[in-house]
Length: 440
Image (cartoon, rainbow, N blue to C red):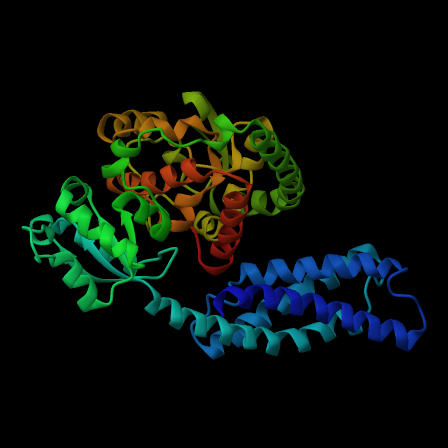
């Protein structure tokens, strides 16, 4: 149910727009498909798709009232945007009957799709029951990760230490017994479990009976969307990286980056006067903030942002930016919440310093510190850094070396799975994040 809810919503939106357009064309005696309104109705469909997906429909709302308000707000915003576009064009690109009639159909339909997604979530929550062979520290990590935002819903029903799962021979099969008693569907083995032949033999027997068996690193990859650094030594560099090993992907990605940055440059030009006025009134300093960051191949470049801190903070590199940082001005806080402060980075994308999607670039002195403390940290510099990334959509704002360590595990996942499909997925989640919560 959950998997079909989103396609059903997208299909319903398209059907509503096309249906309303055909009704209007029949009533006024013109050929809908042969008119310019056909192309504009396709644009309206795309706008509605972006608005509903960005608002998190149909999966994210947790209550019917929230789903209804979200649907009304997102579809209404799309209708308003279409109206503004028509006003700027000075022409009725689409009939008002279509622009404002479509939301009347889409909002209740979107709530219906939300019900399907909710039913799917309930089933997913019961689908994967996990038994892990791991130490106490890894048990705590698994509980925390599965309670957060896993890519595939699961519940940890039991954890056995390697010595508890070990078989002493004969009919002694402690791991099998636990799996059968808990009705587990997935067994996860850490390094110690994989090194014990008796545990592997029990896991193999369960695998033959239909229970899925995963290494700890593979479970993290498939269920949690990250690669644990503690397991990285076992997989090393035994995976391709899109920008290094697939030339066609790298070229297409650069074309997409350039087109997106060109569109962003238009938005940047429109907001500069507004930000300049706000900056003069609330920040009293230079409009742009420039800071050296480390990019692809370890090359340093100067990143551009609208300044959000007091002028005295310019060039400061001694501390991480924290929540409610006293250096951030009121106007700067608004720029961060709205993410407008990031807009000048479209210039970095056009220059080739940044991509739309990739690991976020850090300051050189932080990179030096982290490379000395975190294994394999420099691997993140094999690809072009990004305006947004998998770590940004999966993990809260990082403000310490510990946060950098956690985010690196998501960045390794991105390196392993880098491709256009994942880039689109990250872009969509970023849009949801921008619409749903503020920045820092």
